[in-house]
Length: 183
Length: 197
Length: 232
Image 1: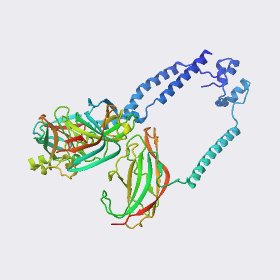
Image 2: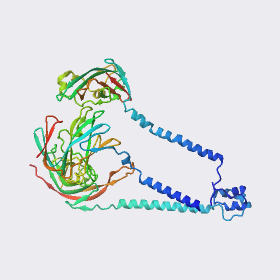
Image 3: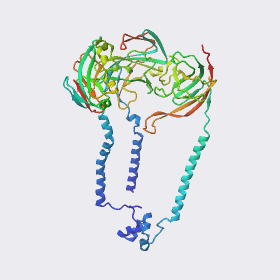
Image 4: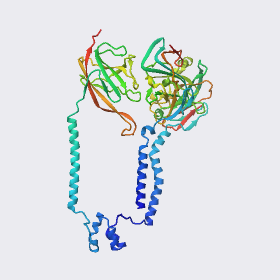
């Protein structure tokens, strides 16, 4: 037959302290393990906008950005329209610009976002031949660039014909969650 | 004596509870399974990123596809199901790359890749917010799988906590299986007509 | 912590202390003190000889187990199971698919759906997906074991459409043609030997506990005579 010695007050205090430490340590362990995942998730989200005034340049992700113009080309079905966004970036830091791998979206100043079309539609190239000199932002980051060079870019989107007020959102991977709102 | 009995009972209860916990523990597949949005054909269903309404479901033994002036006949060892739907993106441009038919016994048939020239296929269409569009889903499965079947639509096939729409097809018991369905591509890829032959 | 008898006797009467006795091997350290105090009923430490024999016996047992499992592994490797030979036209159950090899043709003219001209070995088979979901896991089921050189993986065509096969749907048997491009310098084969691999389904795998299909050793051997087609 076994018998345990009676608990001394010191033992009782140790037991309560251990339980209390558990209440602190478990959330701390969860926090430490998930810290990397949470920061990684945050770096994918566009959370902090940097807004410009119309026509002004703003510095973001190693370049100075400016929205040159937004054009609408109505489609024959009278419900959709192609939106052409022309913008330029003056490179200050080519390495940072290339690492940014810019993600461009069109926003209606609300919660809707349109992703760019992969190919420039023929109707746009016919209506505005100068677009052939511009590149998409994705191809601009692949080319080797020099500091001080200005890259002229254009992206096309398909949006409803009744939305007329748009912002262009530029998001660079190394500066996220800050993102640029060009207007 | 009572103390011994009480301790034995407590141990037995703990064993039962732990055994129950072990047997009901969800596996990795269940933990990362998609969040289902359920509904019926004809209803407008809203998931987090997209909306879909199934407008028509037709069954056929063969499909005759006419595109760019060329005719092609597709046969199958089972039957074809041609599902027409209205789809729209909610907040951001999205492509719903996963469409499948779930048979009544849980067997899953992904949408057919054989009719690669078919117009308006949902799985290759980029949906833009504010621009709802018509879409087509084509499935082939054995004839025994159409009663009580459902359609599963999701943005990606490898789902982890994404929304998946589960749309009960609700076909009547006397649904007709047409001998041939003629799918004709119209002027653009969003334009088509279906006729029964 | 169980008490040694001398500790118990410090607080309780000697008779009660004896009643609370526990066989604690550490108590032997205090052997000298308690020997005079109480009458010992049994030895209170394990002799060194007994300890040594225990270690040796345990070590021998573990060694015997290791030797047995190692020699069993050696024996299995030295005497592999002979693959059962299956005739052409008989179905082979590979777990996820059922394969029935039908015939093999070798020819030099190009297939209407292939883009390269060259010698090719076309094997016609009937494939049925026996799992509960559409799958394209049939691609590595067949390996040619008597090929003159290493061959590129085959392309699979659906005989029904005469077009490339992507997925196979459950419970829908299909005639499929697998095409191996034969290198120009190799001699045309007279007969081909196939090794048919297998797969098993696990509801919970060993890494994540997720369901999946896993490769297992080959399950059958099939020999097909090759019909050589004359070039046009």
